[in-house]
Structure formats: structure tokens, C-alpha cells
Length: 456
View 1 (tube, rainbow, N blue to C red):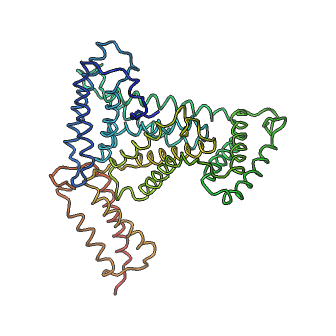
View 2 (cartoon, rainbow, N blue to C red):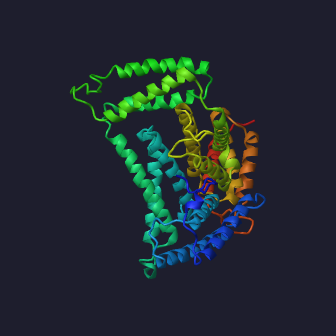
View 3 (cartoon, rainbow, N blue to C red):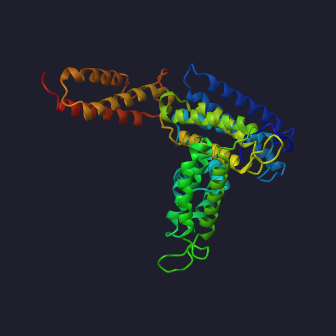
């Protein structure tokens, strides 16, 4: 699934890099190393000119690569080590563009498409999802489609018919995601409106049973018994093993999905009540790694806009892709090479999907504010929250009470030059609109509080 290369023999199966492509590979490895070094430099803000310049140089290499491959008559599915390194470069560029606040530009969409595809494929493997689970991905793919179509349509006349390499790479990933999402949507679309509530309840029960498998056996038993009772009630709704419409008495659409999911819930319940938590000892290192990544990503989700550089997510992306690479045909294998027990598979796949989902949420919540503007942005968010709290709970305020807030607001406003917030080099960073909106909201709140202030 993931394109990141693992030490499990995948690389050896790829075609060799031709002599003509070797200089391109060397250049791309150099670019990847430069990006990795920039990512680790936490002492300085990212300079847009450095990132964009490096990105444009990379596009030149991609154009050259396409030209060579056309001459070598390779088909569109041909891949060798260059494609793996190029994928890593584009994922890193994507994170840098997000960190620079350039979230509406083509490069920023690449890593989001990678994580969307990983989420969709895990939904497809598990078969456990509702239309509501798909909605965030559907919405984001529409937004990315608009960005791609806009970029494709704004070519200069002399560029007409020339395919930009970044559009080609992103469009290919976008089309894959749209196609796979469409297949998932079709599965839920054929379930009748009458059976949909039952389907959604079974999805919830199935997920909860997986979550219970992480608990000690005695802690999970009571809840498992309650689910057992409910599953029997749902099973009793069947007439001659079929769910029928209460209005017409005819067999309702979506039998395969509902009955299959019901039987899977009974299987999981049986395993849970018989064995409890069943991650074998030799699978515990994978389980522990996934739990650690999950905890770290959940913590980032709570504090992300205060501490996170989008490029920090790269290490999590690589770790998850490495763990993903341990699976064969969607299954984790134990130390003997045999598939792990079914309950353990469910637990590990559940955790992997949870981590990918958290990673996607962090990427999609990235605000279009450049890193250099984040200190101002964060100060204004804090001030706004304080003013809202004062307005909600503070009651009438005196001029003296409001003075510290006025001083803080003035000190932030005085940072502007000709109405703009500038970085240390005098450039206008991305995110002016977001920050100005926060500033104006703080002023509005201040005026409301001043209008109700009381004399001392």
C-alpha cells in the first residue's frame, strides 16, 4: 500500500535505474537529504524562497525523467528506485508548503492524498465504515479537485498542452483516491434506508468490540455481554434468515452487507468472550509502537497549533508506512511467518487505521498561516479566548480591569508595518487574512466590553 521502501525485499524487485536516469537519482537523493536537514533545523524559520527554489529545481528533474522514460518506451506503471525517492521528496515538500501556509497550492495536497489513500484502503480491507466515515475524505477530495482543475486551467497560451509534472503526479494520486472512494460509496449506497440504522449500529458494535479486545478479559466481559444481547435482538429481526421491509414485507436491499457484518460481530464477540485480549507476545513490539504513535498523535491533535511544525509529521508518516510494510495481503505475521490470530489482526489493524486517521486530521487541520506568523497568531488566539471568557463570566468590568487586555492588543497591532505583519526579513508571510480576522475579532470583543464597563 505505502510507497515508502522497507527492508523486506521490495526494493530488490524493482527494475534497475538506467545510466540515463542515474544523475537524476543522485540529484533527488541530494534534495531529499537537504529537505531532511531543513526539517531538523528547529532554530530557524523556513525560508519560502529556499523551499520554493528547491521545489522548482526538483520539477526540472521530473521533466527530464519523463523525457527519458518516453524515449525508453516505459509504460505509465513503470517504477524503480527513483519513483520511491521522488515520492518521499514530494511528501516532504508537501509538509513544508503546509508549514509555510501555502495550503491551497498543488504541492501541499500531495501528502494529504497519500494519507487519504491509506485510510481508504484500510476501510476497504476491513469493510467496516459508514457514509459518515467517508464524508471528510469526500469533501477534501472535492477541494483538492478544485485546486487541481484551477491550476490546470490557468496555463499561458504558450504552455497549452504541456503537462506540468506536479499536476501529473498529484492528478494520478487524486484519480486513484476518487476511484477507490467511489467503490466504497457504492457499497453503502445499495443498503436500503430502512436497513441503514441497523448497519450503522453494527459498525459501531464491531468497532467497540475491537476496542474491548485491548482491555483485560474481566474488564471487557460486562460490555461484551450487553452487545451479545443486542446482536441476538438484531438477529431475531430476520425472517427466514433475511431482513425484510416492515412496510412491504419484501427482502430489503443490502442483505449481504448487513448479514456479513452481523456474523462478523458474533465471531468477534465469541473470540472476545473466549480469550479476552489476544495480541501474542511476539506481536507486542508492533502493538506497543502503534500505541505509542497513537498517544503522540492524539496529544498533537490537542496542542498542534501551539507546538507543531507540519514537517514534524514526517517521522510518524515513515513509522506508519514501515509498520504497514510488515503486513502481507493485509495481515500481520507472527515470528513463524504464520498470520497472527484473528483477534490480534483486528486489534493491530484497528490501531494502524486509527493512527492514519489521526495523521490525516492533523494534516487537514493545517491552517493557512506561515510559521513566521504563528507567534502572533497564537497570541491573538489566546487573547481572544481570554476576552471571550471575560465576556461570558466576568460580569461588568472597570477600565482598570480591561487595561491589560488593551495593552496586549495594542502591542500586537503595533507590530504591523503598512497594515501588514512582516517576518524578520521584511517579507509578507502567508496568513495575513487569518491573523487580521483574529485581530479584528479581538477589537470587536474589546469594544463590547468597554461599552459595558463600570465606574470604579
